[in-house]
Image 1 (cartoon, rainbow, N blue to C red):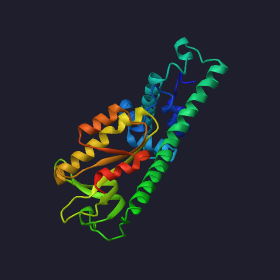
Image 2 (tube, helix red, strand yellow; image 1 turned 90 degrees about the vertical axis):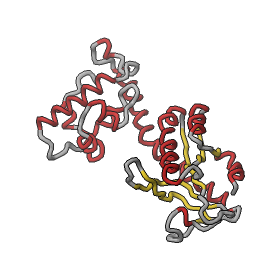
Image 3 (cartoon, rainbow, N blue to C red; image 1 turned 30 degrees about the horizontal axis):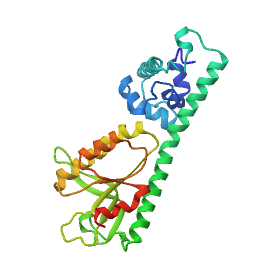
Length: 266
């Protein structure tokens, strides 16, 4: 009952690790567990994805790292759920049932959130497609443009890779959800870049807001200050999030006010 997590238990049942991550306050992500416990990413990936212990890992090192996992989980266990830990006992039947129900609900949410978010993004892009096609734009054909700068005027594309230069000079592709070359675009003009974002609560938006700021910084470093990168939003985005993005020069359109896209010169 989360009072004594033994390495032998984790070795026999490696697939319980995602469940254990949901027992902490707050629930911790996989990468966060790796960092806090100071353990091998390969061990965690094997336990969570392959549902096994790494076959080539030395037994002594395995036991050592499993102990570290158990120690961090016990240390961070949510005291409002596992109320018996403070008392030093194993909890009543009702307390254990309540705790397992809460952890199961957390796990369901952690598994479902990416699926729901992906479905919301698909719906958002479908809404954009319908909006642009109703105004005479067409979707870019396969192989029609070498890069986003060579898109014909009056075309749009989804999930388009844009090349940017990182610190140190390395070039990488970053995916952009929607790229639209305006009808009146002249040679050398940049297309409009939009990221479709949805959020089911305010907390997640604050965790993710730096992603967009990083993208616009990379784009400006590569292409100059005239390039734009904006957001197509659905869900819970509060003034703190919007203010943070505005400070980076990022504008936004709400999905329920999609006609505001007119203000972007389309």
